[in-house]
Image (cartoon, rainbow, N blue to C red):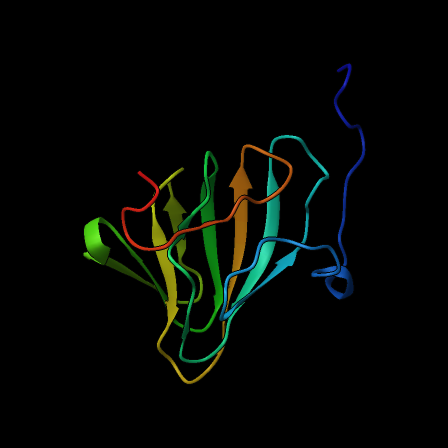
Length: 134
């Protein structure tokens, strides 16, 4: 098909995180497949023990989270009224523009694989507080 890349892209484990991606305090976001496609991108997020991200959303991007290791949570909804806990092997969908916060209440790190679409680069819009994006 014209205009469509015709090659398979691989980012080796040693190269994950070498490219820059949006950051929030307490969370280490490592770019993986960023800028390889105009439709989708991926990264790895590591949450340090006893940490939480800023309240944020991902703009027009839907976000799929795959919990790789550790036990973490996503808080969302009006005034953080909803909480979803993720354990290794769990998948989560965060729809576009949904304000949320990632939380690691545990004593160990949490690692998630993050896939976002549409777009070649991850969008992270940090907010001043719940409801401040409206």
